[in-house]
Each structure stands twice: as structure tokens, then as C-alpha cells.
Amino acid sequence: MSKFQIDIDFSNIDLASLETEEDFQREAKMLLPKALVKLGESVGEKTWEELQEKLQGNGGKLKSSPSEKRRFIQETGRTYQRSASNREKQELEEYIVEQLRQHK
Image (cartoon, rainbow, N blue to C red; front, side, top):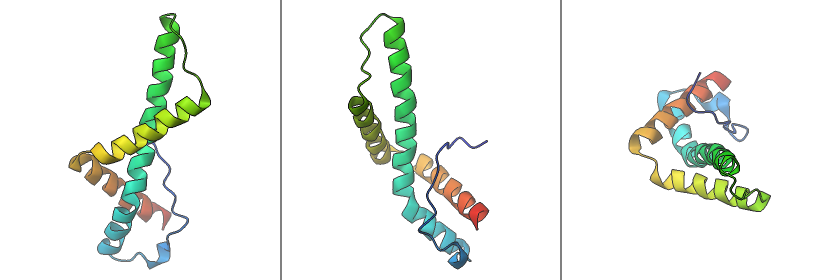
């Protein structure tokens, strides 16, 4: 099981044109920014749910507005995209290449 629990949209990619390692790497680099945001949003959603559970458990007020949740998740995604380490980016890029190969 991969540590990356995100779905990557390959619908706009001509998978048949991916032949060389460079082709796969180039495509992965183009998909990386959106994949980083998706990964960050996934983390944001889990974090939001954990925070809500903790607040509820402590008798605190729930911030369950759908717009607040959406804003939090989107901001977490953008923040993750900007602050991901080179190692995280490289690992995600390798995961994208692996997924491209599987979808081909």
C-alpha cells in the first residue's frame, strides 16, 4: 500500500506516447504541482476531522461549516504544495511515474 492516498487524473495524458524514461519523468514533473495540492488537501481533510473530534470531545464548539471546512482544506493543499521538501516532491514524482506505468 502506498503512502500516497490520492487519485491522479490521467485523462488528459496520451499514455500511448509515453515510451522512454524521460517521457515518464517529464509527464510526472508536469503532474507534480496538482498532485502536491491533492496530497495536501487529503492531509487537510484528515486534520479537519481530527480537530473536530477533539473539540467535540473537549466540549468545544464545532466549526462544521462546509465553507470553513473547504477553505481549510484548500489552504492546507496550497501550503503543502509550497512547503513540501525536495525529498517529498521526489517521492511523489516517483509515485506518479509508477502510476503512469500502471495505467499505460
